[in-house]
Length: 399
Image (cartoon, rainbow, N blue to C red; front, side, top):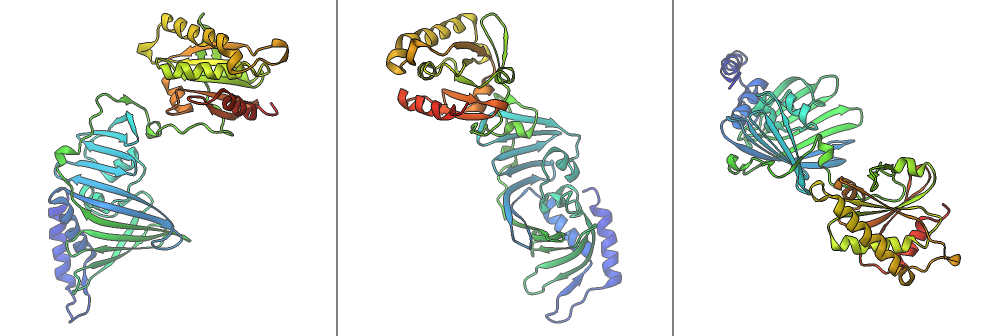
């Protein structure tokens, strides 16, 4: 351990000089550093795990709370974190992060060992873990960037329960209190960080399991650039700003949504290629839009890179536009005078677009109005033509 031997000698000397109070049932006064040393030893001897519940509110144990699970192998500096849906593994200068609700992506980053709380805060949102602070830094002073400890001024042990209460001060803020269990492990920390802001941390021992099984294998996942990229796509909703969509036509000409809506509202049939359900849903969407001649319609077919080819584009275009022409009369009657809306078929090799717009839907109609604001996202798979047309009409009202 980096500072343990020197710290032990110094603290024993200090304890010998100051002495301990042992007066019947009265609390036993300790040097704060000696109490922290015992806690450090509890977290650095073997792998451990702790469950955290962190509260942020106007008073202790009040307000919003979040939970986490921390596992640490201090000897080999292997750390496994479970932060809600996020799972992160640290070892040998590599961080691997995934989300349980996203089986496709992974974030991989490097850091220079040894792992410290400061480096952890550079790689992730701050994790106020007493166990990690003691295992990685051998003190509680770096509990989190927003909990800088200025000094631990007192420590008292309850001789009946064995619980030690540490009292200290935050740098530039209020008091901080930590309770150490008889085992030396931290039970809770309560800190007054502002006039009406408290942070309370409850730590409970858990089974660490086999550290050899903590690793996260990034193989087979697409690597992303940030933690935000790991978040699963949220379905686009009315009132959202439409994302920038880019497509090309059969001649290689570029089409951008931002340029299209600058000229007026537009309806986009966004569909995933390579699925029969998507072709059927796309045809139903096109049939509904043919009854809206005032609303320019774009069919955006999204391919995976390894599935795209000119032959596939021609085949899907024929299946969509040709079949829609044949069935339009029965599915969605043309407006008076026989006028029909123009349909333009485009393609892309960015599956992320369709995953972001409507996760899980083979095809949707996205109606975008002035300023690029989404007016409606209409699901079409398995629905009657009349229902689709009614939803498109409502989304396009007043455009």
